Length: 291
Image (cartoon, rainbow, N blue to C red):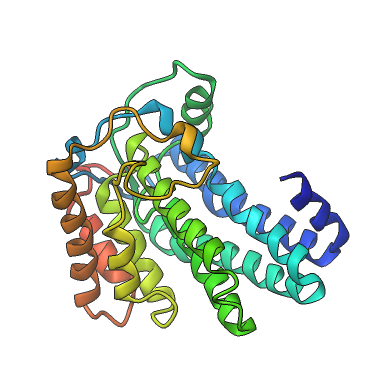
């Protein structure tokens, strides 16, 4: 992260975009949640859950992986600036803008219907204490965590293709893709999201730009979830924290099939308004009283 911060200082335009993105995140994610938690009643609230969520054990050791999702995409900013200099800085600006756009995109759902999941009241470590203290947990579907890590891969793949460096960047692309899968595992293992939130995130990414994130991409991504460290190349920064009580092998296929099945269900709605399938789904799971 230190080298990335240096790159931001070297490229003022990249730094300016980073600050703008931070302001968007604060405004469209945190402040709206705090307002909704402190002054309930304005926006409906839905409970997002599925019986198969119970197949995923709560695993506190994944918290470090979960919390790395911001540094995950910021490291890509640093890489672009270091490797491609002026051209890389322009790509970094585009990439940062795309992350900010995800918050605007997902906010179109959150502002109409909040959503939450049941998470354990686990505050035995400082990291979990901070999460419970500062995260009202009211914007679960679609999962922005998953959208952000997927966008990181999609944009980097697009830059590699544009530069004719797909082969040269192959190992990095694989590492970023696998990292996105591991972070998605983590959001489920620490019980910040339901599997339904993952399906909605995949759908949102497809509707954001179907040419950049296809159904084939979604299927490849989902069918690589819930693997053990022995079955795939866990990025070294995550390897020490990946393990412990994992999903039983006999349940993995059910989880994957549900996620991709719900993703296809949303896509097959073929609504001109991309929000409608998610808002309809959320309306069926609303609490009896508005939040």
